[in-house]
Length: 203
Image (cartoon, rainbow, N blue to C red; front, side, top):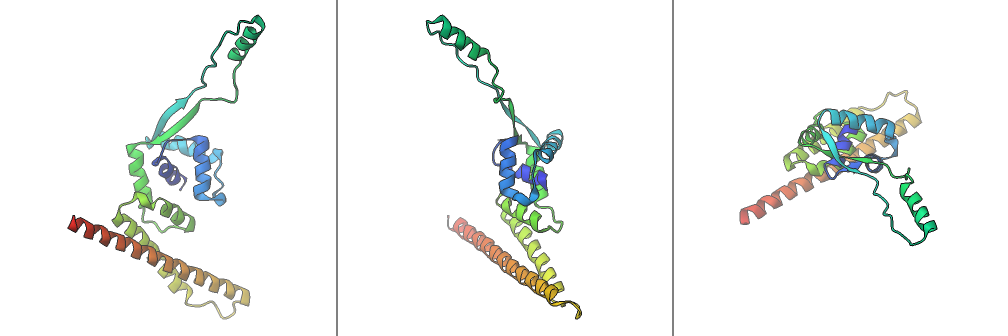
């Protein structure tokens, strides 16, 4: 899902590789372990496919030479002017293309059952979807959680020890909490839709 995260961030604004890595770490969290070793191959794949492109190149600005009237001072200034500044390098910024925007929506609306991290990532970019797609996404998650809860309520084997039972109960409680949260998000989405429709009808 690294490509989805990259496209989502670049759809908001062009970013350099370093800035993109920082934003990815903030968006995905430390458990994803985003490194330049995984980021740049993903960027190259997306660029080759036409999903992203170079946005700009920031080159080193030349240092102006100002005469001081002193031979010693002028020679020193000339040396500074000629000295390469290794800390300033050309940086490549990326931006999403029309093809990349389409791919982003396709990845975001993919109906494959999501694991916890993928769901969280998609939810963080849910604002880019239409109302209908957002509702469909949340309802798929509700169905997934409902199925998980029904399966877990069958109960553990009678030989299961106390600690395993406690862990299973904790997971059930977490699933119930997540289900209630999703139900609330769905209700809010529907309320917002009704509000928009009522405003449109009175306009």
